[in-house]
Image (cartoon, rainbow, N blue to C red; front, top):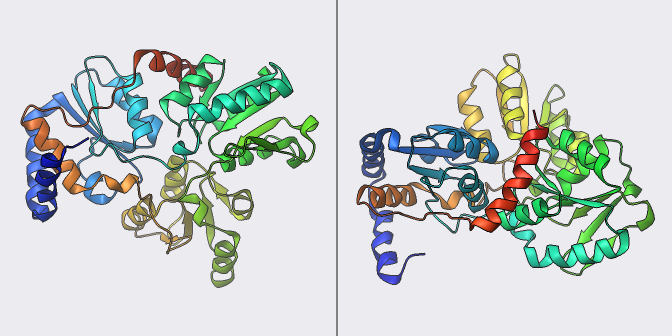
Length: 363
């Protein structure tokens, strides 16, 4: 974190001409050469993405960083849990740097170790040891560590069906956190019925379930603030206006939205859908609007639209802006570290167990 003097100095970056910062970032990148790698999540703004050596979703970027054995500095333009995952997977001699340590994830913040320990005590009291924890990669290193320590596994939106199929074979009950919508969508795709799904309310410490004895999948009451902004009215209104439209959405959307869509897929799957669509296909996309706007520009031969044009992009992701990146690069050029994200060895050990299980099962 910056002290008062550093904050005053940093604020000057918002008074600089953007073109000066852009030129300086490019120069510093060139000066570092292969000693520095800059990666950017798909939801970042174009002003950040332009500098990326690689772009992708959170796990892909962490894996790309882990496979790069030459870069001593990895500037991770994403959010905190993503940088943590990159630190866990990279070598000890590599620094993972987050331009703004306040760039977090509201979904990841909806599950903390204190809440999870209380939930686990309650659920194991009711269901014994016949329960396995599964966490979305959109969670803190501490949550991944808990899951790894208790024989569980991490998942992504692209491998969720495969990993959850495995998990349901390992135990009678599954605790899925922190995103209830992804968990519900995947569970129901796998044939789990609504009365076999419960919802754990972490704030109130209770399981919402009509028939607790029938429950197979227990969802954590978390969600993505971006994907909460899409509803079935958006879908029906566009279908009424454009009968030929294709609606594609992320599986973090509510179940009624995914049911109403033509295609449901991970970020990379949504991008591929647009890429492979025939010319003039009208496609409305339900995901972060920074990405949708970029797809509109990248594929002018397709009629790409926002499912909800008034939805906000991820506010926390967008804390990483041009001034923060310019400040970070200036720090590195001056021989200072910037905001290095470090996961302690014990947490990293168990979190890596959950990630490694996932990677082994994804082959």
